[in-house]
Image (cartoon, rainbow, N blue to C red):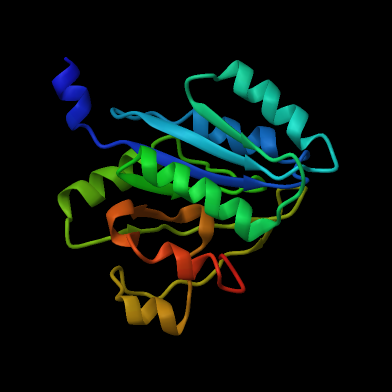
Length: 190
């Protein structure tokens, strides 16, 4: 059995959070509810929030100790530094990384399974994404970001117009080797 488990792909879920007390429970619940045939772990980078986000994250870590790795700071270090340390933890754990920030959530309990299944049989793809809806606090749809009508895209397509919505993304960690330093020095992480 151990040989089968070691051959299964593993997925890291990248989550940065700061002052997301209104949203963090729903975000984490959408992740721990995922139904997969492979191991996954949520890495939460809590950046010394001034609201109850940290307290909620500690409660959730206690409730789901095998699913959550909580990365705390002793002072606020800012979004890019927080993201960089969470990214490093994700790459060390998983073959793939999915993204869900502390004020986002997933609606499909098979999201991770579908994306891993796709990447496992399509080795020429390094990233996959899906459509999303942007909601307000009353769950009213504000907008549905437009994606090109095609179903496959090149790196140039994304560089010319980044239509990838953060919480929809899963990528192959090996594709990012050597790129993370420049990425986390950029002005925007999204």
